[in-house]
Image (cartoon, rainbow, N blue to C red; front, top):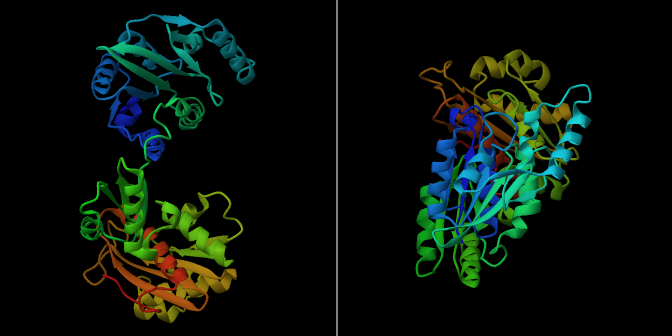
Length: 419
């Protein structure tokens, strides 16, 4: 079976909201071997919604729609579903009463507007999918189109609500779930996409295994697919062996969980000293729950005065080499470990732009440093792109360097430079 995704909302088209729902649905469906064959994003317009459903069902047997199930005038997914399937919207009395209770609990001093009950309108023949985290339920609607059985799933737009309804009520209903070999995936940490492909293609020659690559600031994400589970597993193991410890453990795609796992396995603590990234490395690490046992904190040392006072960087280093230098990065990483009594640290200093660069030190020049025990490594990087992209690359390279030290394979075992 094929699955398509239709995401609704003007905010998605205008760029004011990041479409994390598509990311979630794509990853969860791919994990069970049913990656979407098509994804469309459409505004809050009934005619456009109907066009999107028509396109999606030309390519798929199941269509999962996100958003447009609330009570306001721009929530049109129910209307589009009823019109597309040539059925009427019917108000569900039990659902209407549930909505009244929901309103009273949250707005005891406000009178409920009549339009709030629009969320109790369900296309005839539709099955209500309860929403444990919000007011608008999901809906499952089965129908025939051009002689084929089709299924339309309507999910609420707020990510927490969509995820809860999908996991509890949609995932178990997928007919091929658990029977189609899942896609195998891993990340080659720090690996360039073109070089990963160059190594992978001869390895997979003669195998009935599909290869897809996705470059990221942390390396290259590799996705292998195939109908023969044994052949897919053999290709997966061969590919992981090819790249050795460059592969993130357990088929993980993200770098930070790997770094956290390595620190925890070794019983080490971590701190950060950041200049050009402004604290985003510490923020990224603490995005993951349960790191309080190993992450002690960070210092944002944006000015030279703070570098001197809090990180104890020798003023002579700043005078002779400047804040953007290997010497300063090394002093920062040592200083933050001393000040915060930690086993490990990362430090970054650089020019993120768009201004502030020179011929000698251009925008994109960054020094990242890592320290594990007594081992210290400093790396020079020259990044391209805008300010945000430079900061993201800096974060990734600092954590990649820390991972290398934790694995004991930093190229020169001390101070090194990378262009």
